[in-house]
Image (cartoon, rainbow, N blue to C red; front, side, top):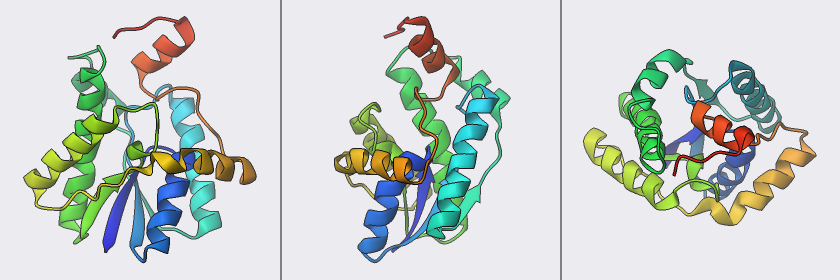
Length: 180
């Protein structure tokens, strides 16, 4: 299949990219993460992905950083897990629409790699959005490769973040607070 793979960061991209290519799929990455804050964090993750993409010779589509529009949307719900669900919906809608408009057979996301994401919610949102756009959501539990992705990041000297990426998760991480 020709799969559009949403990328949250290079370390999480490494395992599903390699796995899906080994299975014979054609993979195109899709970078869309207006949730990442501050902007220097966004740039660090982006530069890390550009480096990985060059080393692995993988095509990646780089979408805009519409942080203000995202923030207006996201501040309607700040407590987990609903804020996370809304974040997944915001980004995966964009990915699925691009997949539909550009003839991809399916779309998926590296959010399925992280042990820190709401895995079942990611899957549920992906499947809902697949119905909306008429493009299948390729589901696979990539969490088994989480550590392998981290190891690839070390080998390639890729930046690895310390929090999910959103403004609120940054505050939770570094202020020691929680909005559960």
